[in-house]
Amino acid sequence: MNQGDVHFLFDAAPEIPSEQCARTIAAFGKVNGLRSVRDVVYQAGFPLKVNAKQAFDRGHMMPHSAGGQLGPNIYAQDRALNRGLSGQGRRYRALERKALSISSGVFFCHLRYSDKTDIPTWVDLGLVSKATLESDTFLNRMDFLVGSDFNPSELSGAGLTSILEVLTRGQFGDLGEETARFYLQENGAFPVSLGDSGMPRSNARQDLDMVALVEGELVAFEVKTTYLDKRAGTVTSQGNLYCPPRRRKGTRLDRSPSFAQGSSNYVAQRVESILTVDGTLECRLIAVDLRSLKLQEFSLNSAGKSLGPKSGLVDCRGFVLQAMAEIVGHRGHL
Image (cartoon, rainbow, N blue to C red; front, side, top):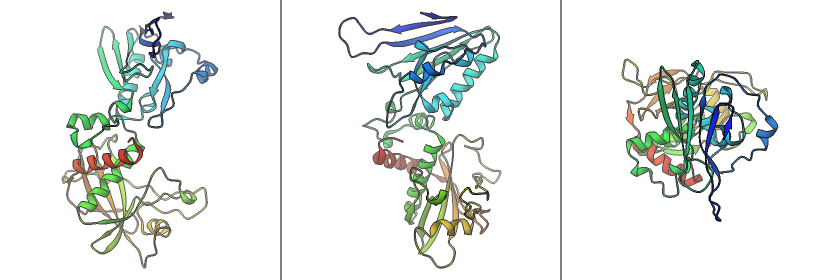
């Protein structure tokens, strides 16, 4: 079947009764740089796949910006992959942009399935021209990596990287907070309160990431997790992690006082709903670098500015694996 310059191949269900869906296998065609008119009504009528563990978009095999149309060109695509919200999503979008930047070439998309459904497990994307031959493979189904038998302790280095490549910033934040918790517990701290990015916020205020009892004193912790950032996987000239920036004071919609993240006032404003304390709480920042699998504590002053490292670099791979097991055990997915 053709749609203009785009050719499609299908894996049709056999004529005899079968549970297998009819599905598109591949699309390939010339890149012409002509954007087709998007039929919003038609696309809105294309049923989205419902999965409590993963969000899907109506993805295009041949990108819409390259003349891709609807019908067989649409498939259930992982939202983070389609929108460039994960590490592999950024690679996916970069390859699409490269295809649009050349004057002549052939772009192809190959969908690979692991069961009888019409949701592909893998997406192969490639570009062929006189100047380049480039292809990449992307995971489209998260249950392939994190299934019912998921055991983080058995992950190899490559296996862990495969999982990190499909996570979004929100998932990195959750993983970083749980990683910091296991680190603190390993070092004798006792968490009193933990934040949860999935919980509703009171008066639009963000909960503290963590409050813990450290050597008999209550300490507030802000956790910053990096993986997609430019500085992820790098250290300063002194051999420390870069201390991630905190949010600055801004104007709040609810007109309540706003303070710099990590400052004494910021902590006091949020800790009042957790417990009653005399005086102010010390606030520290824990930087979790998931690319290098290192973490480091930083001291903050009353204004929320860094006073420098509180600890040396810590290998956090074991804590990351514990955190993954905890999150998956709690909600069934990362």
